[in-house]
Length: 249
Figure 1 (cartoon, rainbow, N blue to C red):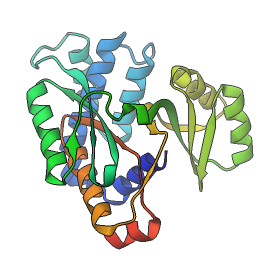
Figure 2 (tube, rainbow, N blue to C red):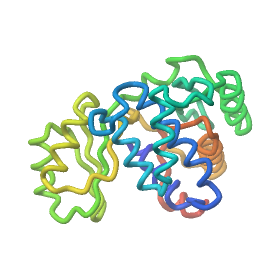
Figure 3 (spheres, rainbow, N blue to C red):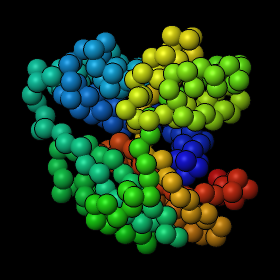
Figure 4 (cartoon, helix red, strand yellow):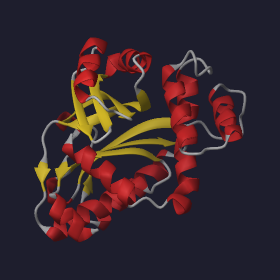
């Protein structure tokens, strides 16, 4: 859990919104396409699609881009090669386990790009299953505007959630991934501001990185992977102290 949280914080701190907007929109568009293909092309009837559309809107993606992505996913737009979801696994510097979710129209290209990102920092891309046993899938719901953590804890328990982490007025709710829609919908009905609801890979064990050079290489790997257009999500099980993180910023 810490590895993902740390990397999420790093990405917020190091965000390059203007420079990466094109890449971000590509990732969001692909998520919408695959979500529309996996169920009905109607966000109201497809929770995965609704979540993808809400995330795209929050990022400022134009409505026409969203509509075009839904049309592609539903088969009403055929100018692209079919997209497929692929998971890559490997080990980064210091034995850090890394799990990558990608969407691609060219397996060979994506594999080569991911492998190069690992090799640049001395890591290695492994076989399927080599690190996934170190993670577990959970539904994660991000909330904003939390003013009463105790009331939220009660609401989470009643909705079927398992865990809660609060930082200031922001919170993350964890639940069984099969109950994600149920818990998110329940919290919305209770008046909570749901910013995102997604299935994530949460590390069950952590690698504490203390060496500055190793920490720098780990962060470089995460950034390289996150910048690849085909990569949707990157998860890792590293933990870096705040003081060391600040010294590397």
